[in-house]
Length: 450
Ligand code: UD1
Ligand code: CA
Image (cartoon, rainbow, N blue to C red):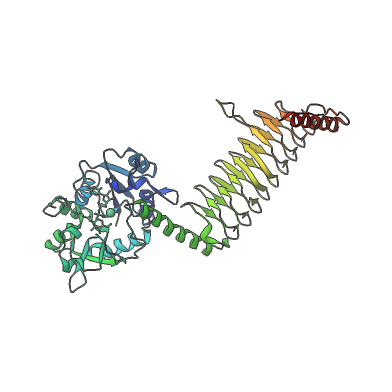
């Protein structure tokens, strides 16, 4: 059966006190709504509609980037009303629809899959969970057959209903056509005067369609409403990503100190030392080692390479096999070819470093003139002396040597030595004489004081 999805994301998330819509806050470097979209895709959901606030331009742009559609809900009349806003796009969809909130970044494809499977048997399915603190979640009341009788929102619940520990996570699977029929029949006779998605199962029941409830993990079902909950979701996601890396044979000696992004690719048998941050877009090949306190973003690290400690690799960088990048080296939009080395205190931006080249301590590519970026090209086997400034655009031929402290402004042909240093001036005994004069001046000044 074909699968469609609706993600509710029209709330402004006032409890975050942020200019950014709540669902755009990131977990492991991806907006929360992106995690929900990805989990739906993983469960074979082919059409995904994100329901947004009229001021949710950022959410709509992001949804489009992720290949999802979007609609505007205006005004916000409740979760049932929000889901019904997807009707113009999906009402003729021949298949099953799943509804989920956009603030559940830990939800997995497996849970969506299980919901669809259960829906296929029973006609409708929802996900329940038993959190340590049931708080203000909607309570799920089951009948003797363990099917859903009704959901009671916390604000509408009596003491007995509030004592129920099974809570509504906010995932519902149903036949699309029927779903929109029931969503259109909802009323708002409740404490919040809202059209509740959670009343759909009762309408279905009245029409003879029963709703099964699957219990899922508390952590996975967590909804994020505040900064504290966002931090909690991030921590839980990091636990998940670290465990996956270890399972994939990545050498993590202090996994709790390594920070991952949702898309970090670490091949088996690479090693990551403590306190490394992987921002989005990183791939590390087998046999590479990322040493402590390094920060990587948008880079590919080849096998046998050693990065850090204290290295910063920025987007657009490719480090080939057996390259060594040492402490306080920053690379941006730069390709370092096989076996080259930049071991200390260097900035290379918009550059290519040929195979086997050696970049001395303190080397800098002057790649920006205040208006434009320019390229630096360093040939294979070049030896760049310490503290060389390469003023781009500039091309250093294969095998060139540059003298320490040189400022290179013109292209240098292969195998040349280039030095731009001022000649050395030497004055024998000068320093000794200078000290004697100054010492005498100081003594005379002290003698004058009353
Ligand atoms: C909802 C459920 C509750 C469940 C809980 C799980 C309802 C009525 N209640 O309560 O049973 O236990 O989630 O976390 O569904 N939204 C819209 N438009 C609206 C209202 C909400 O798009 O008009 C979106 C929000 O952006 C949010 C999601 O729907 O992503 C859930 O809304 P929220 O107000 O957080 O619902 P809860 O009160 O937490
Ligand atoms: Ca919520």
